[in-house]
Amino acid sequence: MAGDNRYRDQTVPIETIHDILDLLANDKTTLCSCATASQAFLPRVREHLYCNIVLDGHALEKLTSLNDALDSNPALASLVKTLSLSRLAVITSHHETRGRPVVLVPDLLPFYRLTFLRSLVLEEMHLHRPDDL
Image (cartoon, rainbow, N blue to C red; front, side, top):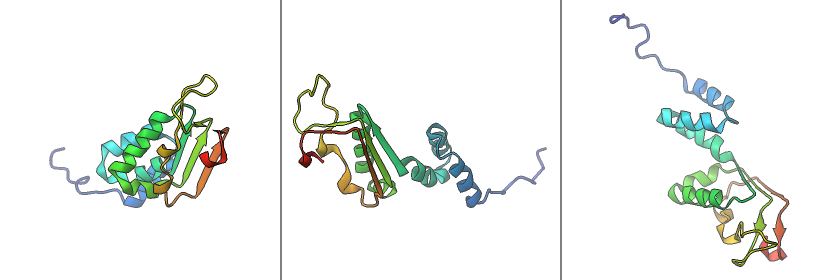
């Protein structure tokens, strides 16, 4: 109905939007879709996307992307609460180790930016010496 004004100017309370986005916290694809659907969703979506960063295996591209994101928007660093590094080789020189390519160099880790980091999870890390950590 063209003259029906019942639905005009009705907004969903921000608390309800937050509750819905909170339910989607583990669904990264849907969260990204929500962020592109409305600018109003973006702050809450970012909280979920950046809260727990997991870098697993050959994660050099992910680490580079994380550093690029933090370079372009330093405020994102305060959203990172947990950083999980799993099955990564920390190499200080650019050579192969045990036949595997260099996965990670310490200079790329964004620790100095993550001032609100509450938890650092290290699993199956290969370090050449204590200084690598």
